[in-house]
Image (cartoon, rainbow, N blue to C red):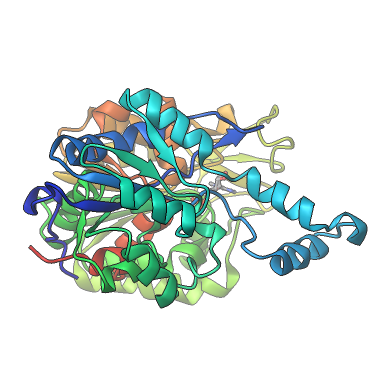
Amino acid sequence: MNYQKKSVRDIDVKGKKVLLRCDFNVPTKNGVITSDKRIVAALPTIKYLLENGAAVIACSHMGKPNATFDSFVKKQTEKGADPATLTEDAWKKSLKKLSLKPVAERLSELLGQEVKMASDVCGESAQALAAELKPGEIMLLENTRFEKGETKNDPELSKKLASLADIFVSDAFGTVHRAHATTAGVTEYLPAVCGFLIEKEIGIMGKALADPERPFVAILGGAKVSDKLNVISNLLEKVDTLIIGGGMAYTFLAAKGYTVGTSLLDSEKLDYCREMMKKAEEKGVKLLLPVDTVVSKSFPDPIDGPVEVCTVDSDKIPADLMGLDIGEKTRELFADAVKSAKTVVWNGPMGVFENPTLAKGTIAVAQALADSEAITIVGGGDSAAACEQLGFADKITHISTGGGASLEFLEGKELPGVAALLDK
Ligand code: AMP
């Protein structure tokens, strides 16, 4: 896949109406935004467009609304709701909770200028506001998933959205692995380029995967091997060292013939792990697995509750114990591998990091990346949250904003919302 895509800097936006796909899928509680991080992250592209004379028609999805009354009834019935409560009013109320109005208000405060809010996605309100919009002004469309054609990548919806603008700018990395109307569909009808967020994502991750500074070390963790099959296989084609920790390590350890006690085990994936170990050997890739393991009698309940632990060698996990984090020797082993690397990619925690007693492995890896001089890339989700919570975010070269998208990137999959942008 070509990661050399045109950005807003490569086109003339002056006097143009720009449809800008943002990621405004912010957390809210009772209609109040609890973190405006994603809105803040979108500001550089928005300001660039406004300052360079574009009229900005911003759009985003938020949550998973039921775009039709029928789908609302179906979903709620599946959840066991009382049929008497499933009225049109209840459906409209559920949509209201996912309105982007609070986003328009916050964005307006951050920009210090009015953000005009459309009451629909591409109906009369959106069309009227877009037609009147002047250079330097900005409006926001309603939640794009209020239209059922959005996630279906419906050409009619894409055409209608495209008719509002002259140019499409994509800046929501978290959604580019999905071919939706506002990530891929509209590019059929408008010249499409990326904003600064996507430019950074594909610039850094694209370079790391296509032409990395070596040694290139990848660290994978998280719960299950089966979630990351293609990531493991693709990374073995590219890295010098592959480190596997977290719950997924036990299936590899079991595949080596070790007993893993009551640890998480993907018994259907034992052959796959053997195949990957063979592939690593053939490719000359160093595959590092935990050499010691923090074990406990059972999974902590609640997850962050007290837990009694001890550390054992990974080839001697007692039958009645469960591996829940990497041990101290492993933390050193993994940190040493990071120390000698020039590029490091990390995705997935090393243990049940939600529990402070079992977070040491994940913290050690985050610390190793923060201390490293290498290009360090953390793929969304838990590992990104860990770096941020520990205050290491500014010591990491790049923390991806899209969990799912960054995993598919590591799998070597084509991302439809990136592939559809104009090549440089
Ligand atoms: P993932 O979504 O695949 O990145 O997995 C993240 C989850 O894996 C976290 O909620 C961790 O608690 C969990 N996890 C990590 N290590 C283990 C382990 N050794 N046993 C059980 N769960 C684990």
